[in-house]
Length: 364
Ligand SMILES: *Cc1c(COP(=O)(O)O)cnc(C)c1O
Image 1 (tube, protein in one colour):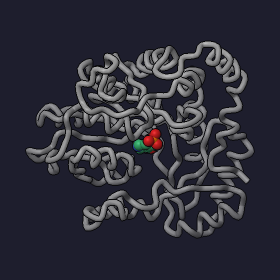
Image 2 (tube, protein in one colour; image 1 turned 120 degrees about the vertical axis):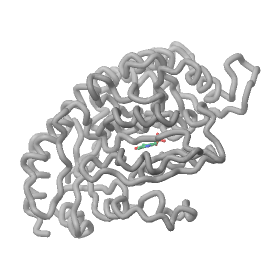
Image 3 (cartoon, rainbow, N blue to C red; image 1 turned 90 degrees about the horizontal axis):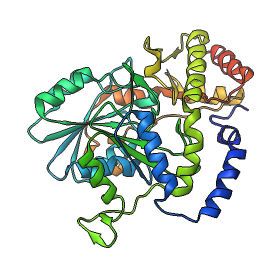
């Protein structure tokens, strides 16, 4: 059976270094916001090409703290694509602001930039874009709109660590970016983790306080913060993995290129492989198929696990009854048809070829 993702094999590559780290960690005796978090923050900021990085507990908190850091609150509106993981929307509603959900572009699955201007009102404060499945969003038009209407641009970069557009990394493309280090992400911790990257020094300093009870000087609390700190152990392990991220992303790209070239089946709609190849880090290889259940059962019976990202759009979730009447035909169609094939850096040639052959023999 080809697993959808084989985290154990992925992380087995770091076992020796991880054991050395643990010895050092136990000797060091610093547990919260110590040297490892500090070092990871500066290394990840350098990697992304930003002035600042702030490590937090997870990707959802990273998003929420950016929005709070920009004073986005009740009465404000944030424009966001409808085909995303629910965390993107949860961050907005956690601040009391209203998500203004728009459709994606059918070729890139990223937010349809053409639909943004028509959704802007006097309450719009930000555009929260998602580099979905690892594909970087083209920023040029977004920046023009942001300048014209005085909006913040916030990146949900949870799926796109390392993607590069015009020589700049995701994480440095907007005013601020949120990353997740959930184990399955392109840069994954051995537990939960997240970070914010930004060049905005004011925002960075505010989020440093917000993640730590609203305090930068111990027992002096300027505002009502939260406890959401990147764990020292996770930071140490992320430091081991960061130097291999580009190599891993290159392997993902090779597999994606192979799938795009060799999967040929009229029943399957493949993602388009961007000319600007570095703009995509292939967190997920998402195809579309009309009879998805059949396809998944067929693949499974032939030794290939698949998953769906995501089967129910956030606006159709029970958690968002207030949004259930929204009509987003493309987002809803994608939720019905998308299915992800296994794609991760330690897949063997045999496994990759088996995925291709099996997909090609699907009868529809
Ligand atoms: C994973 C993910 C998140 C949330 O990250 P957590 O660390 O799980 O909180 C947010 N947005 C997107 C697009 C994600 O894929």
